[in-house]
Length: 583
Image (cartoon, rainbow, N blue to C red; front, side):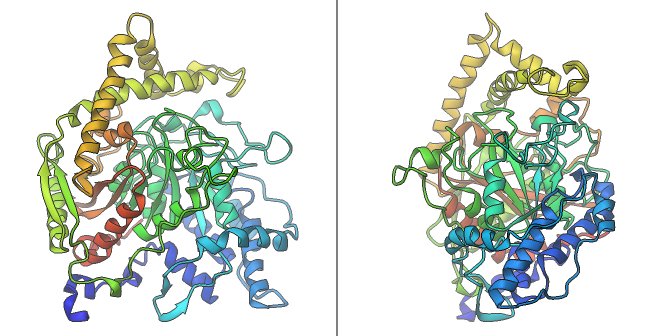
């Protein structure tokens, strides 16, 4: 009963998420009820994108197929509702599209909506089976005919191939590359294809560090992105554009990629939720490669619930990706496994008991709370651990002796792989033909290519690359041994809050050290999620701090469950300052 639920839980409702950034679930409710349309949402996202252009969160403007996809989503809803004639609605005007886009306007919408409905309906039965309800009507279930993502505007990092749209990976060397949209050479990333099959409207590309190499989104050829909390500070990187876009309410969810923390560190700096899945759970097909044995794809969202919905859509086997563990490990069907459901098991607020995490065991990693970590950050992580204890969990402190070894091992391995992956951009096979590698690649990328090439060179590979691989194995064994005893490990997502733009751009080692909290997760291929742990004040500015929860391999469902309970149960205590102003 209500009396058995802590006050922090009783007084929190999902509908109380800050109005500056509605959640995906709230957006789906509004679409279902007819309070808005996909075209209205696209118009609002486009106008918001233009109004907050000073953040530089996006590269280019509205994607060529966005208007068509939004109108197709609205048509599907009209057909399902039995409406014979189009309902009046606000559509994306030519002026709005031109104001935010450097792309040509898409061609006239073809009448493909009915054909698309059959394709989307085939996968929506799993995707729409959810316990979510309209907050205003506890008895009203969502429509089971359309996916929760149908009509929702989603931004994607600029290292995903989207047909007919430029894909630059933040680099001058790819400034003229456009992924083919038709014919035998048509190419699209697996995750964007899956989202579009569920009716999502991919409307824009977000800014990023060049080829994902950086922790600040300052190395982009399109210029630095600003943090919405304090525009003199970085949003993190390399998925800084995606994190800033979600934090500034330019979209409710965005896709990012994580090689050594590129989803989780920006999530912490921008006060959003960031999920890095187990390596191999989500196909990398169609992602511009940085370090192939580390790269992962995941969502940045306004809530854990939203991240779980997106993961349900993108986590599915892909025969074209040999690192895709979901396909390689599933022998039930030649086409791979069925879509997975990571969200319908999440409990609603009224379903929580007084100790919802009773029986769970967590551990704070001692090495992440000592020297070099901001005292304000440590305080928020310890306070978050105390909140978990109030919810019934046991929280211990453990030592991971190999934790400090991960950073140098990661950079030797990642840069070695990068030097090989980026060799293709020679202005002959790939890359702009009117420039050289020296002119087309930025300083940070060239630095990392040189370091990786040196580590792989004759006479040095045993001293560097081989030892780094051995260290990687030690880190993996250490973390997995702790996770055999605990449900999740707890660390800060970053040792400090967001730092000033330009503060570390000329000090590569200081920038590298900012990844110390996240790279071990990538070395071991483990899943991790970053949730809000509160805010700290620095030089009169309120800045968010993220709590990282590290889970067991392919244990995303359990990890999301814990993170979701923590999020809704501590909403008042943790999120009270989240709705910032003046973006």
